[in-house]
Every structure is written in C-alpha cells, then in structure tokens.
Image (tube, rainbow, N blue to C red):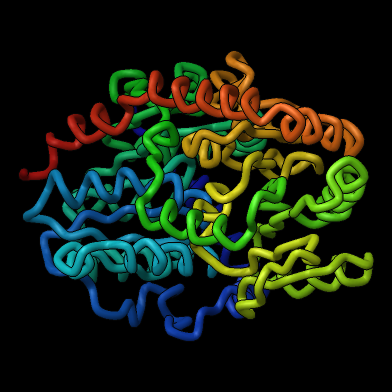
Length: 430
C-alpha cells in the first residue's frame, strides 16, 4: 500500500524553520576533532575501507550498550568495516573510548563520525559518501529523511535492539502518519521484546518484517582492562566500605550526598565514588561536594584517595565499568529524579548488588530479572538508600550473594546477539 508523502514534506519544512535553534544545538555539541559540517553530510573524515556496515547510536548509553554488537560485527564479518555514528558529543567521546579498546587490526576497520541532521540533502550526501551495505539503527533512532534516502538508494535498514518505551510510543502516536511512512522503509525490525514489537507495529511497522530477538543489553561482559584497573584502585582504598553512584543527573547528587552523610554515621570511613552522566557537569558537581563540606578527590586531576577522602569524583570518560567494579555496592542514577533511569545491567554484570531510584521506566524490561532475584532494590528517598547501604555493608556476604544472583540472571537472558547476527547474514558476506 502506498503511503502519502506529505507527512515527510511537512516534517522537513519544520526542520528548515527550526534551523536557527538546531544550529545552536550543533554549536553546543561540538567536538574539536570533528568538523561541524558533518552535521550536513560533509567532511566526514577518513572512512574505514569498503564494504561498510553503518551502525547509528544516539548517545553515550547506546554506544555502551552496542559494544557487544560492534565486537560481534567485526568478528563475524571480517570482510567488512564498520562506521559508527552518534548524535551527541558524549556519544562521540564514548565511541573514541571504544575504538581505543580495539586491536590494531580491528581499529582500522572501525571509525566514527557524527550523523548528519535529518535534512533531505544532508541524508543523501551522507549515504552517497558512505555507501553502506546495510544500515543498523540502534533502539529507536528513526529519522524519516535518512530512512527514505536509504530506501531510494537500496540500502537495507535494520533496527537492532528495537525499543519503544510507553512514553516514547505515546509521543510518536501524535505523529503516526510520519512514523508510518518512516517505518515503511524498514527491512527488518529486531525488537527486544514482544511489547516493543507491538508498539512498533501499532505505529505502522509491518508484522512480517518483525522478529523478537531479546535485549542486547544482556550481552554486556566485563572487560579485562576494567577489572585490572578496579583491582589497582582497591589496593589504594584498603578495606573501606565503597559504594559507586554512576550516571547521576542534575538534582540527584544532592540526594546521594545526603544518603552518604547518613551512611557515614554508621561507617565513618565510607567512600562514595560519584560519576555524573554528563561531562559538562563535572565541575558543577565538584563544587556541590566542596560547598557541602566534603573532602573531595578528582580522578581527572589524578588526586589520590587519602584516608580523609569522603567523595571520589569519577570525572573521566570510559571508566564507569572500572569504578563500578571497584565498589561493593552500585547505585545507578537518573532514577531518584524522574528521568527514566540508566542501565542497571552494567554493575550487575560485574556481580555487584544494585540500588536504584523508582524512576526506571526506560529500563523496566532489563530491571525485572534483577528485581526477581533480589539483585536490584528500588529506593525512593535518601533515607531508604542509606538504610539499604548500611544493610549491605553490615552483611558483606549477603551483598556478594545478591550480586552473584544478578550475574546468573543476566547469563540466563543472553542470546540476543547471536540471533541478531544470524539475521544479518541475509545482507552481509561472512
């Protein structure tokens, strides 16, 4: 059935009207080593050798979650290289961290650039330059003009780890004609759950191209480099009670510091490792800590953790796994404030008991297996968080048991990566 073209034309017209605002956003998201003209499909830099797979991830969280897929693609399809694109500066920085982890041979086959803005001309220029064998869009990156350009140029489009939260679904329903025309260009939708598949189909995705493969987030495995760094950190921290609060957001750090203040009444030598989600907030969070009277050490400044240090600020990129591994208990941020939470599987895969606030709607599906075995506990207030921390530090063996239960639960839910790669064999030569 032919779909009307007016929704995409209207969408493009709105983009042009909003160009001044979009230009400001580009300026804010600049990374000095990348040309701003990449946002227009120009000056993409040195691309990896053809034939190319193109994988797009929105930002830092998606790049982290896609790491097993990236490694799997490089290993399964040695005749291909991989171009990774992101929308945000933090995503670009995380991509660089990932590239630095690759072997010399695989690093040649992996490159990154920014995704162009979804103007029709920019989308065409990007595809003309990249000429991908297949386009892989991670989770919910549905850009109508890019999808249309892929269809026009005969590039198969696959949504991997397809995710559509109830909140996003409600938002997209208001744009159903536009979303239906965009989804009509998909070649395969590899959904992470039956509920996600149903929501995509309600927006217009065809049932015959939809497969439920499971969540790629369960495929995350700890890196040896992160484990070794955590061991080095622990040697300097002696036997202190250490908890790590990762991916924290604005308005949340104050609540976490209050919980830490209460914890210190029971364990005066407790150490909080605080890792804000966004680099632009590192200095702000450091000031919050010092203004609150805390003795602070900053990782970016290579400041040692002394016996007097109460808060260690993880103000570097790409080291969250190592910091999680160095703690006895993990708290995953974006969840004591109503922002939908972040990936609770990262610390659970390291065998850590995990705490989170109640606002985890973006990760309910991966949180449920951890909740079922007691490896994840939700708390609503700093008081409740402090109580739970005290319980874990009072009973370290219990904390280890809960952490191990989470690791077992994650292993039981693996398999999405193998199913995704098998599906991609239709378009890629091994």
